[in-house]
Each structure stands twice: as structure tokens, then as C-alpha cells.
Amino acid sequence: MRHYTGILTSLTALFMAGCATKGESTNKEALKSLPVTTLVTKDTTLHRSYVTDIQAVQNVEIRARVNGFLDKIFIDEGQEVKKGQLLFGISDAEYRAELVKAKAVLSSLIAESKAAALEVDRVTLLVDKKVIAPSELEVANAKLAAAQAKIEEARSAVSNAEMRLSYTSIRAPFDGIIDRIPLKKGSLISEGTLLTTVSDTREVYAYFNVSETEYLQYNKALAKGDNSYRKVALVLADGADYNQPGNIETMEGEFEENTGSIAFRARFPNPSKLLKHGASGKVRLTTEMDSAIIIPQKAVFEMQDKNYVFVVDAANRVKMKNFIPQARFAHFYIVKSGLTPGERIVCEGVRNIRDGIEIAPRSLPMDSLLSL
Image (cartoon, rainbow, N blue to C red; front, side):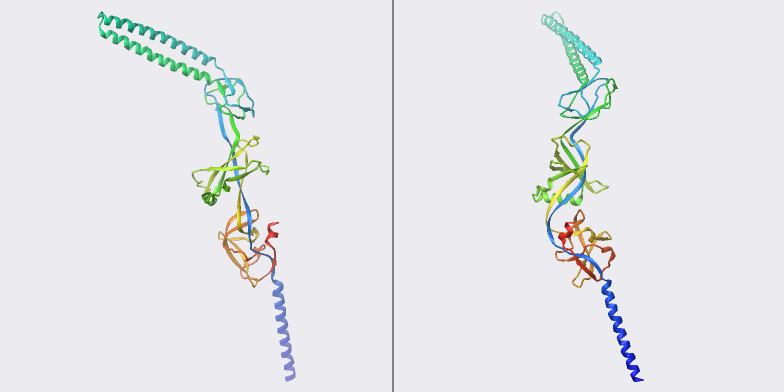
């Protein structure tokens, strides 16, 4: 009986040992194989793009200042014009007649003034000879003063008539390009009617909005004397790079209440006249960053509006760690704080693991991730 009991005990021990070995083997097989990279610092160039609204340095509406018929159109849509060049002619017969009438009134009043002046001379002589009372001279001087006042009024009427006549010839206020001409020859127009728009596109403004954080970074850089932040590039609507560099000139005085952003204005030269008023594109800011820690976007996950990665310790166990990003470009984040060089992080598959588990790390150099 003791013999059978000893055999049973031995078999039980072997069975338990076999189960333990099988369990350990299963656990090792269950470890997730995940790509892991070691954080390093790298000098990098950060590109940030912003949607922009392109406007001509000068863009002026040309409107009629008098009523009449559009008699002549001297230019065409899209044509380049010079300052002072004749653009439109409005029927001017009525305004010429007004000018002739005003000049006639002025001539008549000048004649009356001369007669009043002669009367003053005559009365003065009679008063000196004591033929008439001095009060008569006062009356004569008053009549002369009234005549001279009427002359000034008539001259003002002539100037006004000349000005209104000049408004029938509409000229370019500066060198520029003509926009669409909505009216045709013979159209009846009234004061204030839009005739066309002239744009000076030898240089253009590019307006774009940045966040308050980026605004503060920009001002800190300028305070340190780093004017490289002023340099910007322009990407056209078709994705091509514009061949002229630009400079940030100024910014608006207030943040937009709804978005919390502020508008910057950059100026670009436009010698080939490629850029037009109202065009779109993207302004690109380039910043050189020394010793930056870069992590792939796939390594990051969010919880309660905070950014986390899984850091791998020496025992290959993962632990959640919060970090603060400084900027984001392409498929990467630049770390502001929270992570240090030499730490290992899980590069991909962070949604399928949990804090504290052991993994089978598969090493990937950071350079290979950046080259993807």
C-alpha cells in the first residue's frame, strides 16, 4: 500500500510541474511584440502652415461722382493702367452748360462791382466838396462790399461747376490692374455707381491667423533679436512654392473673441503679377530648433485633454507618462516637457495595451521613423 502511495505522490508532483512549465510558456507567448524607440535629441527645422488671404496693397473701387450716361470706356478688364490714365467718360454737356452759366454770372457780378467802385469814387469826391452828406459814402461802400461778396460766391459756383465737369472724366488713382467692368457703354449711371476696381499688385499682403501661444513665442523671439521669425514663405493654391520670400510686418490689435487667434500681416513682392487680389494659399513659417525631442504621432494618446505615451522600463513593463507638446508637424510631436532623452517609448499599438503590462519590445531607431 505504501508502494502505491509513493507512486501516486510522484505522479502528482510531475503533473503539477508540467502544468507550471506550460503556464510559464503560455505567458511568454502571450507577450505583445511592439515597436519601441529610444528618445534622442535632434536639430530640426519646424514648418508651420497657415491658411492665408491675399490682398493687393491698394485695391480701390472706382465709382461715379455725378449722374449721366456712360459715354466712353477707354480701358478693358485685366488691363494694366498708369496713374492719371483716362478710364471712363460720362456725358458732360449738362455740366459744361452749368460751367458756362456760372462764368456768365461771375462776369456780370464783376461788372456790377466795377460800377459800384466808380460810384464810391464819385461819392467820395462829392463828400470831400461837402456837396452831399458823409452817410451817402457809407451807403456806396456798403453796395461795393455786397458786390464783392457776390463775386466770391460766383467764383465758388464756377469752381464747383468745373469740379463737377472734371468728374465726367474718370482717371486711374494709381498704377494698377483693372478688374471687371459691370456696365457697358450707354448705361445710365447715378452718383455712387460702381464702375470697376483698380488693384495695385506690385506687392501683396498675406493675412493669416495664429494662436495666442504662437503669438507669444513670436514676440519672445523678436525680443531676443531673432528676426528669422519675420521670414515667411508662401505656398500657392496648387501646392507650388511661391518664388519670392515674404516678411511679417505687423499684426492686428485684438484677438478674435470666438477663435482666440490674432491676425498677422506679411508682405510679398509680386514682380511678375502672378498673385491677384483675393487669391488664397498658405503662409509657411520656418523655425530652427536645436536639440529637440521628437516622438511619432502614433505613440501618443489623449486622456482628459492631456497627452500620454507608454514608457518602457528595464523590465519591459509599460507605464503611462504625461508630456506637454511644443508643436506638431507632419506625423510627429516636438516635446516641450515631460520626457527626457534615453527613455524608451512604445511607437505604435498604444490603444491595445494597458498600464503595467509586460511587452516584447522590438527596437526601432528614431532615424528610421523620421525617414518614413
